[in-house]
Image (cartoon, rainbow, N blue to C red; front, side):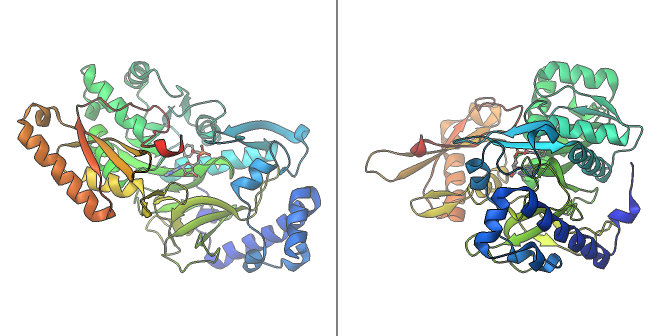
Length: 433
Ligand code: DLL
């Protein structure tokens, strides 16, 4: 599979017809095969016969992470365990992890959407791909693997870690494509320089980065460090893994495969749809999955959606980059704070590095404190104390102006903050520990 023009450039009315047909079958399928969904439909007073087309989707109840956890491990499945050929687990922070499973047809679907993803990023059939996402229970490594197999690429399944070996493999086998988390791409650039390798001379021309939030400033940093095109890939285990949406070369939103993953954007407080272009929570219905199809799954990721045509010719709607998570929001002294707001300020200031950590604490009976550790250039550290204090003051003021919350800023030397080879942890909330 290389470029499926009929699907990628389908007129929106045809897309809607396919979505409608698929939703009608899906409603019948889960009602018949999954007792949890039967109960959810019955409680909402909805029968599959009420679903006549995609516009009826709002009649159906939402599915949440809580439904996944309450019915752990196999309660939300529509197929018996014996029909599953693979299972994956998404690690949560509390309680049971989330289990997802695939029938053979689901693996075919995953391979297909991942091949579309690779193609969308600009991969060609003769390419070699280095897959430095973790292989294992995490869906990143194997998801890319299936897509690359489907597309016929040459796969180097390095998984994450062993950075010096990653760099040697890149030099020896000349892959054009790199797939890993954006934080690992940055870390590899640092390591490359450490061993005297100029990252700008690497053979990687296209990067497919995701699994964690990353800003345009981090994109600019990766693109200039590695001299490559850095594209964004989005997905989540509950829906399929990576392969829900992907940026094309124009980097103007992520094309969502809405013929199989139907997107809605809602106001997370009211549950109602927001107008096109407005920010809200992304809700996805898996239109064709068999093992664990999900209806109106609340991703908690905040995006906006556009149906405007893209210059690449694909007609599927595009989401913005992920702007935050409904549950990532930190409430400090009653004010809502998103880590991305802090990142945006930091990366706009000359001399700071894309490594920072936000530490929130509460001393007994005192107000919450926000300490931000920021890595800065060596040259700033060797400057006089006065200059360092000035920079700290400037960062503090700029952040306070954006957040309306007082913060403490501490500049730290390069390489002080822990590096990540998978998803990085930028916020440490000691209040909930
Ligand atoms: O992270 C799947 C994946 C693997 C996506 C490799 C892309 C590449 P989970 O571990 O279940 O699955 O985590 C899903 O990660 O709800 C988002 O909050 C976040 N996330 C994933 N991709 C992006 C992205 C994989 N491109 C959760 N930008 C999602 C921002 C992302 N956040």
